[in-house]
Length: 153
Image (cartoon, rainbow, N blue to C red; front, side, top):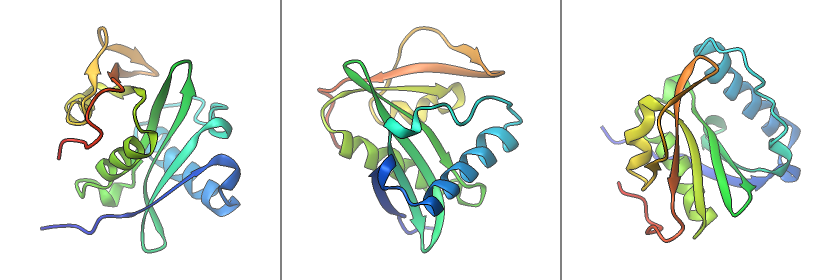
């Protein structure tokens, strides 16, 4: 069954409304802290320098991601999909929208290892071996700036 693509809103931190910021933080905490039972500093100081991707179905925030500059590349992360929306392609829509907006730059992601294939489909290649971070296995992956801009579907 096909699912409607979410509407994407992409904006830098200063343009987020208080309501949007609240929704973003709630979704990230619900997914990364509560669902994954992982105590870590979710509010990490990177949000003010980041560009935020909010995916909506109607008025509801259903998925999210952000990216920020880091040297000669950007770091994509905090990709989260609301529990009720998993398997609908909403996380994929967030990553694809972010990569289109980022354009031809090297993009790094620190992926949970179970999502390695998901990110490979966008042209990310593992860099090194997996490491355990906050009790969860992660692998650093890189998508080079000369990769075709259209993600694999």
